[in-house]
Structure formats: structure tokens, C-alpha cells
Length: 478
Image (cartoon, rainbow, N blue to C red):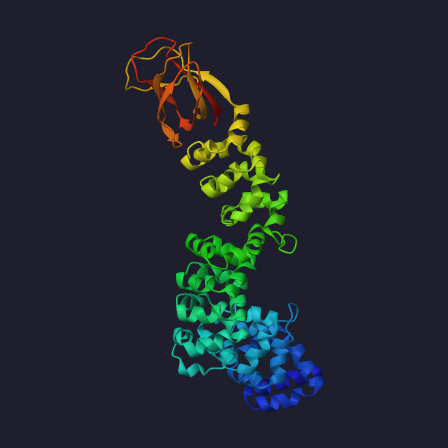
């Protein structure tokens, strides 16, 4: 009997003999409301409802009916809602009814179905307008709507309107391209939080110069981007966006948060850079992520802390990390200035490879007497072989030398106390003294700190005996 009564009611609504107001009266009776709810759980009946303009007009005009379709929707009881979102007629009816939009937006299940509808974009202007409390007819297109500063201010201040906007990639693209529109969004803490949470459109935001310019110039907006893994990862994936974000005035304050979310660890567990550096697990994740290493390396205090950390070897042994940190003179200098870092530095072929070709780093070594003493303990001695070729301008290969080496000092073979002029060269040379003319004697060792790759040598004289050969004290940098 109850099923028959609800079928008759739905038929009367469909025939236009029961209006929305009358339907609301019927549904004030809990029994009638329950009967209709059960009926609309049937896929066939829910499709029948969604395909009828008269029925949908009555549904949206009745708060009780709207609640049955949208407010009560769950993953197990969403048949009526699913029927609505697949029907162009039903989507149009709902989109033009502000109270119905409010009800469905409050239910995550209903909202998730609604904004994924194939008919969502065709109704987007109306949906956003109603949520923002502006008149849809005033704006011919959604572009006109979001390009109007007054309307956009209303949208940015209305959470449902912002949620509707970011559910539309096309509309988000329009907003992201406008500095005026993005400024309104970035200035509103709730609005920019909604944007940051919507991973699906964060690529659009990240690849927009106007959008990123407005975001990085604001403390709250910068923080919101750092607060969500999807947002910070999208920014890091765009070289331009990442450069702007790193250079932003509020980045340093949000670095630990951004770093934790980038590498997939809990910001609550790792709230500071020190806590990340102190954890082999977290630092290992940083070392494998180029953008994360760039973020960490941007902070001089972090590099100083890393230089004294027992976990420094995690960075030094990572090709990914060293591709970033190796060319970073400030970071590498901080490592060279920390005695705790020396063992790791000179045990890492990757780290040594960057040091030996960098004049600033070789100069830093030359000016650090304690480090030179340490390197002396690692050094080896090698003499050139054969005899000078008698050509004062031609370089000879330094046979037996490693491909890359850091020379610490040099002297001449033999026993003579007189000086002979020598040059060292190489495919790559580093250090202020590299390639300089050296007056070498067998009687004394001359300090000469320089990096050479494929080292060569030359005697600037006519001596052609085994006594006129250079001997070097060096550290293997391969």
C-alpha cells in the first residue's frame, strides 16, 4: 500500500497536478517522506524523477524532497542523487535553485557526485553565482563572472562558491591567469586553503605566473601551499613555480612544513629542520628528492647543522642530493669548514668530484690549515716518470696520477738545492694557484693547493735529467 501511494504521488508530481508546495505539504508527514525515500532508492524510479522537468521543478521547490535526494545521500543510498547528476534536465533544475545547491554542497557524497557530472561545466556559472550570492543573469559567461572584481570578491568569501570554482579546471584556469582575481583568493585564508586542498587543479595554479606571484607574496597563502602534499608537490613539479616559491619572502618560515609534506612524513613528527636532519629515515627521503634537497639547501642554518650531523653521509652518498648541493658553494664550504664532515666528504667520490673542479672550494681548503693537516694524512706521493722532453712550452702527461687529484704540495726530484721552474696543468684546473709557475727544489717542499683533472706538467727549462722531475703530494679525488 505504501509503495502504491508513493507511486501515485510521484505520478501526480510528474503530471503537474501536485506542485512543489503541495509536495512539501505531503512530505511533512514522516510516513509519506519515508515512502518517497524508499521509492527513489529504486534506480528506475529515480531516473524517472530526474528525466522529468515538472518532477525536478517540484523536487527543488520542496525542501523535504531536496533533503531526500541530496541531504540523505550516502554511498549506499545515493540512487536518486546519481540519477540527478546524469540528467541534463535535473542538473539544470538543481543548478538554478540556490536552496538545493546549499543542501547538496553540505553532503560530501552528493557534492562529489554533483561536481563530477558531465553536465557540471555547462551549469558552472549559475552554480558559482548562487553560492556567491550574485545574480547569474548579470554575467554572460563564467569568465565574465570571475573576472569581475566585485563578483570575485564575493566568490572568494563564500566557501561553497570557491569549492565549486576549483571543481572546474576551465574556470580555475581563468582565475589563475588574472592577478586581480588571484589576489582576492590569496588574500582570503579560507579561499586559498580550498585551492591548496584541490590537488586536481594545483598544476594549473603552479604553472601560472600571476597565480604564483600573488601566492608567494602572502604569508598565509605560502603557508597553505606548504600544508598539503598535493599542493607543494605540484609547485615543486614546475621549475618556474618552484623558483618563485623558494625565493618568496615567507618560504623560510614554512620550510620545515613544506619539506615534511614533500617527502611524505608527518609534519607533527618532524616539525623542524633539525628533526628532519636528525632522522636517517626523513633525511634519506630528502636525499632522493631533488626539490626537497633544493629546499633544504636554500637554508644556510640547515646546511651548517647538516655539516655537523652524523647523517651527513646520507646526503654525500646520494647522486640526486649532490647534483644539487655539490654546485652550491655556500653549502659545500660549510661542510669543508666543519671537521665532523671531512671524513664523509673525502670518502665520497661524488663530493670529491665537485670539490676538485671548484676554485672557491679549493681556495677554501687552501685557507684552512686544520683541513690541510687532515688531508695530509690521506695524501700520497707521486713522482713524474721519464725525463723532461726538453720543450719548455709543451705539457707532458703526469703518468700514474689519478684522473682527478688535489695537489697539496710539490718538490723536485734529486738532491740539488737550486730551483727549477715548473707548471702543472690539466683538462680542468681549480684553485687560485692552479697552473702557476712553481719554483721547485729538491731541498724543500712548496705548498701548492690546486685541483687538476688529467694532470700534466712542464719544466720551463732545458734540464733533461731524471733529477729535473716534479714530485707531488696529493689526495686522490676520483
